[in-house]
Length: 318
Image 1 (cartoon, rainbow, N blue to C red):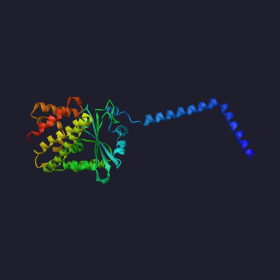
Image 2: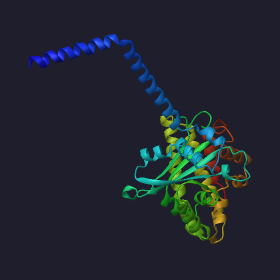
Image 3: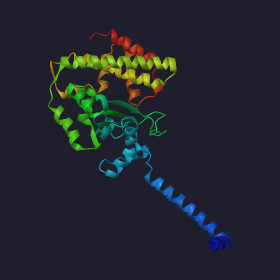
């Protein structure tokens, strides 16, 4: 036992002597290892970090799978689904609106919809609007007014399209699938392209839709007044509510049987400008539409403008 202890002491003394003799070399090796680890980490971060969204949108290339993957990462779709919709296992990423129209060389904004695939608990079907705001991780001063993302349950989107809702049918007709299984998107097209819609059924669906949008507008208005929430949410809710009322007025004038082209036309909201007889109210609605399309500043319209427009609609003859 004594021999073991003696040998251990001698070994420790030898190690200590070696360390003292080679101290400078040891420190250099440690520092070099730390620097190398930091450099490796920085390189991996730069390599895996999503590119700035505004840079990707400037040089869009829908045929480049790497560009699409970078866009997917920049929009943080997987993170958003994991955080908010963990029950969904897959998705379709679709771009729609002015930025995919062939004759629109300089789009003012980029609209994306994520159709989520899966079976949510308790049969609940989700809708989540994630327009970029100053609090969103995907926004920056360059793209804060450029990008909107909508998250929708695939089946609820299909049901709405089959009922004849203009927004959903417009996305199907004009949208471009960027990522996801083509069969699911083609299925939407096949189901709706030859579908005939019943006017009276569509009117009832719109009345339900308008009731929900009215409640949302009143909720946003209350939260703005009591809790000082952002004005933008009141304006957006007012836009949906007012536009649905105008769309309903047009639907009531349709023939009994409606084609897909008829409902898609209702998504072109600038057609409703001429519905207003009062020029002052017409200008207010134009400001509202152009604000939501990001051609005008949010400061160009007030909440009072929205309430005035709603009052005019209530007295407008169908």
